[in-house]
Length: 389
Image 1 (spheres, one colour):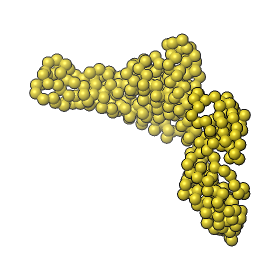
Image 2 (cartoon, helix red, strand yellow):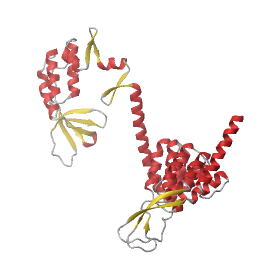
Image 3 (cartoon, rainbow, N blue to C red):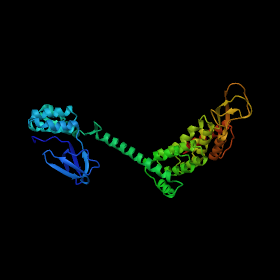
Image 4 (cartoon, one colour):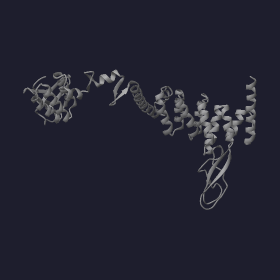
């Protein structure tokens, strides 16, 4: 190891890739035309401004290191002491140099070995990294982890990065719509097949107030067709405020006939908002799944709560807790003075009845008992047929 290296003031990175170390002798020149540098050997060099790419300024600790370093000899004890000085002054890369030099000079220097991550195993110095790697562990984000865990973590990171890039792309393409690059935007959106883009497309459904843009995003999502997409389309088929958007979702869902979507629509037949009951029934009319018949029978008439407003007069019932049949307002024409009051109403659901008629070819109107009797008779017939087979 060299015994002497003069203190540095700056490091001048050249456009050629080389470096010059030394003290700048003309720091106040403005505008700068050249750098006049005194090197550690005492010679003077002048560089044109165009020759210097970057000027690096060593920290105070680095400058102090250069000043004191020559005072430490090339022995294990001295190098260990200098490594400790680097530790105290937060110079990790320089510390490692002196730790490694320490064990070069004294192979059994225990403190230096342990500082470098060694431990004794069967009388031999072994590095922790080598031992952990041999056991199938790798260092990842400051912890030892099994390779499979790292693979999963890296896959998650890659997925997050991909989702972020899709967020940027989809937002940009949405900005092109109905402008000069409308055709490019539509082509790009409808060509997406990457499941990592689902989050970005779904975000557009939430924050874009243009119905026709939402319809385009629905078509793009349908082209990806993952289970997550089905859930998004099913939710939007009930919750979007625009009927054309809802029906577009149902058109795409009808192509899948997903049992999970059928189960979701059935679960919404008991929703407190009567409009949601209506929309769920419409959704089931598209899915045409016989398993929805019994839940539909149970939703022919549903009970909903309404708040009666003060003041009286026609239309005084406010659909705070529910909506009327077919998605309209609740019953009207009542008038109650005094404070608001919560009332309950049995609402016959036309959309539910229409879907039942479509699925069964029968029509017992809103007579739930008649519908259930018919359903039970069908079940008995099927059971007898199965036994005969």
